[in-house]
Image (cartoon, rainbow, N blue to C red; front, side):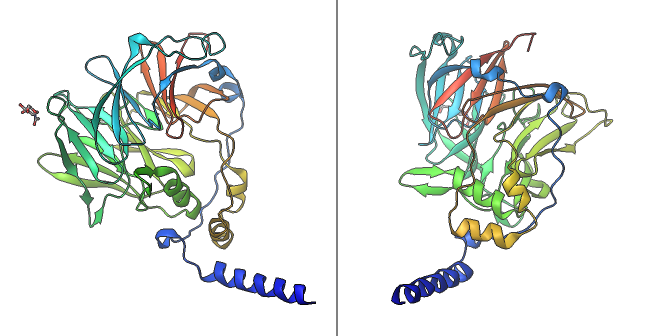
Length: 363
Ligand SMILES: *[C@@H]1O[C@H](CO)[C@@H](O)[C@H](O)[C@H]1NC(C)=O
């Protein structure tokens, strides 16, 4: 009898707590309309091709890799470093034959004291970094002096700068135009959380996705004009890339499983070729509760896990948004693709390594 009383009391207290407890960052919860998931037929048929990708080296949490003017690959790590990787020192082959390529030479190039996500080199060979918390940075490649280019746009701080590459890549997987204009995104108004001296974008991005409010923005920076808002109310905008002819810019709306196109100039003929990294398969459980904000709020307060097993999946798209190739496998989830001379280099935001895959015409 006493036990039953205690249990009822605990249940009431828990219910009350879950009802009134605020979500972190006072995140509001919205709902969304789920679009049908394309059938996995034809080019999208499931495969295991990426299981043959190679471990290249230990680099912690490089969301994006970008090719530098010196031929090295650059990535931003979880502890704020920009690391330069000498590609000629690593070997690429089936993982089964060469499980670890320990020869990869890496240099700790600069530390941006935050969480570097998107990267791209400008015409002068200086590095433009989307650092999640401070915004858009310029790193002088000679002196390593860091300047903040943009940290505020249209009445709001940039809380989750996330630029150039990421889930998508085009020309050189970047968003810097010939004239120096930089396209980037502010993925969410929920900033990455700090754990010790490391910033973790994962929890903030999950919170953004599960609460489902369109907090993301597509931004443009020019030296003369400052920061300009191009698109607002995007669901977790991340992964920005320009068309070859700069006629449009693409931005991923990750939780809505779609890519948005913003036309910049010229006739809207939409030519192009891109790789897009699909960070995770669509989650049927999450989509089933899309119309019920109260249930998603409860799941967040109870801290129930909603992440599935990591799965690597990339697709090649033409300028009309059609999938022309699809490669996947049991790898860490892939957050960016950089193609260099027939090799695909993968960034993994939530893994301690970078990997590569030898592309062939039979894929
Ligand atoms: C980068 O630093 C070098 C050396 O201090 C300096 O000469 C150069 O003007 C700087 N570049 C920019 C774009 O500020």
